Length: 230
Length: 230
Image (cartoon, rainbow over all chains, first blue to last red; front, side, top):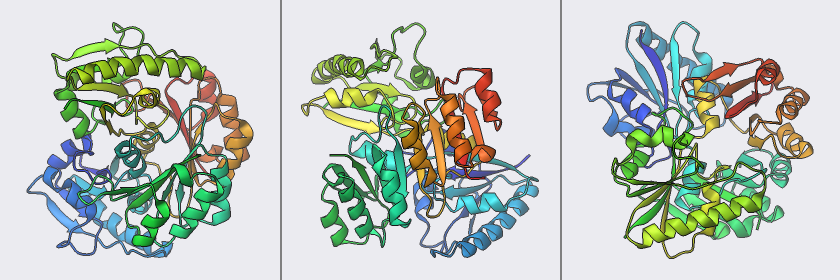
């Protein structure tokens, strides 16, 4: 029986992909890529391409970079139709996601739109926060501490409430919300013991402990802040 | 120059280890194992052993299974001395950790005890919460939601405060604290949409959506609960 595989390819470094993901990709029949333009390729595809069966069929599937959840749901439904069509015809089909498939991924919207007529296997990936902690040899969380993963897009009061009882935090989705992240770290006495990692593990990876300066210099696409109390 | 590597070997499934971890282990000179008895072997060693250079020197290092932080600090200092000794003699030396090295690991205590005279490379691993989400094809967190990683050993008021503003939670360290986890999930309207995964990805892995029954049946070593609002 053919299967649908949701595959986490890790944060960017081509070696931070699992043995399982590589095994599945080397024999895959169809790969669905979450991007508008196949020619420019998606980041996830860039990481995984050397491991993909060279005769696999590549299909791009548009996932809009917007905030409207309904658009994501519709994109997920379109992708799910394609997936079910190929799997029911007997082709093992994969969808690639950056990082881990269960954390802020577009895979979630495909998963929700699939019915139980096909078999699904999710393969976890290295998260950006674990990779950022590793590249800086930092502790994320220890002992009885809580670790919170915060999207900078969420309401300030909520994130501040969660962080005040957390020992370690990772702030993601910084793009237009750097100011909020800085306020959060300052208010929780974490700014002195924080680091920002941009494009973790990629060739143009940047690391800085001066969060404010780094946020001023450029919009933070694929960036993450790790914080602990000073 | 020789290096010290802190290597996450993932949650249990031998295929959920990264290409990078396998490459480093296949050429490693010395491996430090976090266990009292080399003969019974540690869980991390069981996962990684087939990838380790067959002529590598294996050294076991006692890390007590106790709650006293001072004992961990002392154990970390002892291990760090051994590490520095081998690395300074020119041997690439690795320490293995289950899951990811930056999250609730004993590696943290070695890292803190090392001085800057040796080079350190941390290799991230698949976390138990990502693996548990994958094996159950679940979403951990989406959109603007906060994900919180909660050790069941922490104060109830703290965990409850964090969870009330979180969209997804993973509760770890359940061993003697299952009751607290159940109360937390009930109070936050998550018990209906939760799952408990024991020994994720290992041969004797167990999955149940009846959290209370599962907790009654046995002490939960290497278990994790994933919860979302119903």
